[in-house]
Image (cartoon, rainbow, N blue to C red; front, side, top):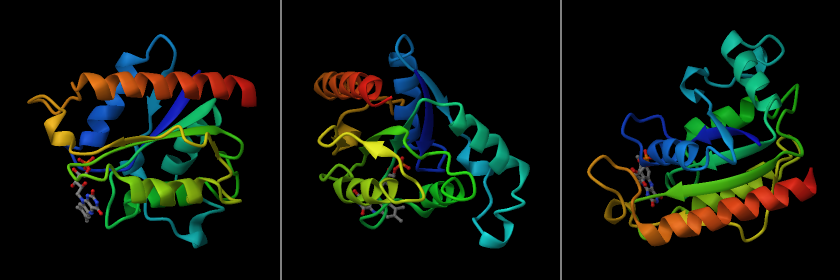
Amino acid sequence: MKIAAFVGSNRKESINKKLALLMKERYKEELEIDILPLEVLPMYNQDDELTPPASVLEIRQRIKDSDGLLFLTPEYNHSIPAFLKNAIDWFSRVEKVMVNKPAMIVGATPGAMGTVKAQMHLRQILNSAGVGAVTLPGNEVFIGTVLDKVNEQGELVHEQTLDFLDQVVINFINWSEKVK
Ligand code: FNR
């Protein structure tokens, strides 16, 4: 199963970016995870949507080629970062390449609440008409107090969390097969 992955943080040492890399390696037998280079996207402007830059066309094609979507997002002020919203806005217009794609959300934060509020917003956004991605109710990964769960390189090493992540990924794959 080909997965287009959206990482919601543009900072170099992003925990969520490291989590995307970990998932790409950990689930390589089951999933071909393509981490999209969202940092090449300009700020969305409706004036440009019919003649978008090459960066938009290139990523749009990668999303089109995928069987499902994976979002890994921090929480910024109880929502998703503008960086992620910008990418979603680009691909929700003209060619709506996310419509009907099964989507899974993961989020990590040093805070206690595990990005729960950002993920609630993200689910609502994904289920909008322009985006049209579908999410499995209850299949959620909230990684709170993440700095206690990573090693010195910032990689997730907390066994219970990894076991839980494995289960959510299995649920996602099984459900995606059914909704295809
Ligand atoms: C944050 N952070 C944060 N954390 C959280 O749990 N809830 C929140 O509402 C916020 N709000 C927030 C706003 C802004 C502007 C910043 C920069 C940060 C902290 C955030 O979880 C932390 O910086 C993470 O490490 C960001 O994720 P990455 O970049 O490591 O993936």
